[in-house]
Length: 467
Image (cartoon, rainbow, N blue to C red; front, top):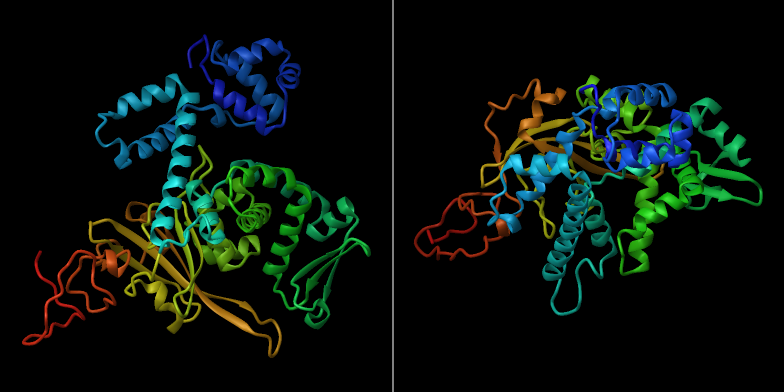
């Protein structure tokens, strides 16, 4: 930074909004005029070294908040968007994109928002085509698909909710914990009752008696999560409502599912605050079990939270997350990475997420390679829900996290499974996989002529012509 300062308008505006301040509030704190704050935020005046010192002193912020390193993040996001096939005929060199971000950061951010909306519509259109049969099926009529598209288009990251959750987490710690906070802030008593008394409910808010009731068979991680989610409903209604409104959902069921998903997002962010969790993630090299012990969370809760760490300027590894049952039914799918999972039909049976049921609670790692040569690293393990008492039903599922191969060396799991190992050749789905010799195939690929087996039977379920 030279003696005249640097132009940090968008970052200064973002800091002010994150702190919940008006321009007049910040001006009073920094002992400058509101008009000068406005000029700095519009990049019509530079932020001087003296102003930076006043910011650091007034709000206890690190200078890294304003460091130039935040620029490359916006550049990388825009470069990633510009690699979309829709821009293939436009000659966009990296230097031009970097110049656009530095000179017009607001326009760059607007472009990314438009691209997010475009991707969301593409997901919805694909669902309509795949689910069609002329009955209007697809994402527009499927609330689960609509919410998945909503989350995927935003990389399962909602920075506004993370900021609010971090502030609340600090208040909870000062109050002595979740139960004490409920008592002090909402005059609610947390009680744990037997399952038969709860009558099928895991959590129930009784305003009349001022009780928040929990099923006593829940383990501590599940109890804390239910408490945090109830707190999100009580304190983040406005923030969750605003985020849900962005989805423009066509059905009330989809809107309600999105509202519930974002409340669960807030619950995880309260228990695992972004800054603290993101630091622990790097320290522990993404060791999910170690992180679970540190934050008192379950394996699945921790793995799920790892998919949300895409806050601009503070990103961690982008992961794809999936949860399946023993029959292969997908009950949860989140994507902050670039893993092309089949949106319809079954996944590849060669992927270890379908095999971990034979080794309960053991983490299985696997290198994966798609037909186009893309490589990924997978972590899979079984998880369970329910139980907690003799005779109580328990559900076993498998969860998996997948990241691109070039991120894998940051994971503790790759230490004993180096990339030199031969990857498992998988496909997105049998209908989209052109590996003709695969013996695990269940369907022929699109566009290939099946050969008769009158005189020759191949190892693979189907024989194909070369063209």
